[in-house]
Image 1 (cartoon, one colour):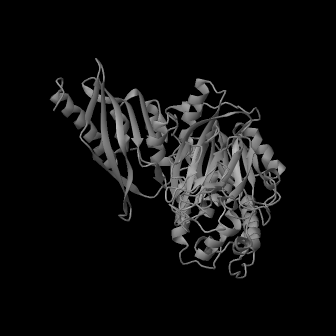
Image 2: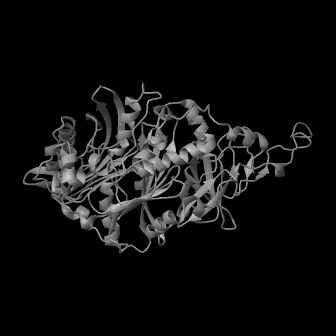
Image 3: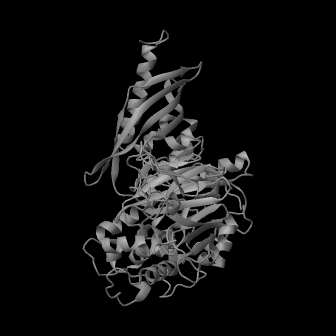
Length: 420
Length: 161
């Protein structure tokens, strides 16, 4: 799949300075600031042996449907070909490198590059080249040129529970092995039947992509940064829950059960910001939740390395695609979901609970800003490091959320792919 | 040319409502913001993309004035965000429909966001699709649909549009 030149270029390691002492509990700030590291991530992670979430299978339901998306910063087209198969390939014409698809989505029999009318089939194969034989016996492609020798750079594609993932590398393990069985089980727990897309949010974060992914994996911050539940007396960090981490470290699922909440002295001490006692929701219908999966888990946040998130917050279900946009910017694409068999009341419940999540979410808006606080504060920090010691130094699953084990797991995986 | 049923007094009253609404938010008088709505109002902020494709998801989705009050309480007491305020620039209001007890109107808006250090950016561009009713001599929004064209939301949206 990869030609040797690509393979050599893709495996080039960044200039490996010594990692500071402390392993995954000490992260040097330069990982968020260094353009060389950013370029290496694009090769070694996003085009390397990892799976990228591309879209939902329901976004390309019929033959001829296509959707444009990204794998890291690389533009990608996902198609459903005439044989019903899903395909994904780089959105870059083999001729001069123009984007082939310029729309978000559509339906076509042939994908045509607007620049010189080179035509591709829905599996990315080059079909024809305008004026290949020249005009009136003059011009035309060189003698040895064969359309059969060229195609849009393909990805391997895998579908799981209605999610479409792709990878540019042949070395990537099968998707379910990459995720790990405990993560696949947690994912299937939520995405257990046909989906309905309720809509999309696009949120632009002014920080390196890893700061957002770390934030999603950080179970320690939830009750401290997000004060909505606490202010309105709706939740406690001390509620029962835990975190499941894949063997690779890169994938995780955290969960909590709201019904076991009790007041907790440590929590009250840890809260530095004063809260008023008299605050209650004027319209509590916001949190009219049902235990739809029958296991009492009211919040589950799941990640797959590097940039996929599945969220269940009460009855609000969404997938998030984390896309780097240069060193210090990130686009966060939310697709908010229900199920095909939801009745009107359930759909309304999900839409109302979507007030909790997204760019204006009661318990998520802070996550849009906090990465930028770090990006701005750490400008001069260079080789100084963060301290990620809550819960020790390892990245094993734990039955508490007062831990940073899943953040250390992220760095375990990241350092492995980066050779750092 | 104005339509034959053009009602200058009504036009002025609706435009005045829009101006006072924007002024309330721009002056950071958020506690007064729910008073522009009826008790059983609908207030939704939706992307033009979702709106045009018939997808029901909203960024903020309220179906009562009490939910608006909760928004204000949360942005004052619970949510964490860097100090910021808005300046609304509104178009002339277009009255698009009249019924016995309600008026439909459309107004385009541009909201500039001003951060604490003065950094100013075009934060949201779109239009208000409103249904206005009269309650005890006051015009109020029975429905305000904020349809934003600008798709991406930079960082976060804490203050209503």
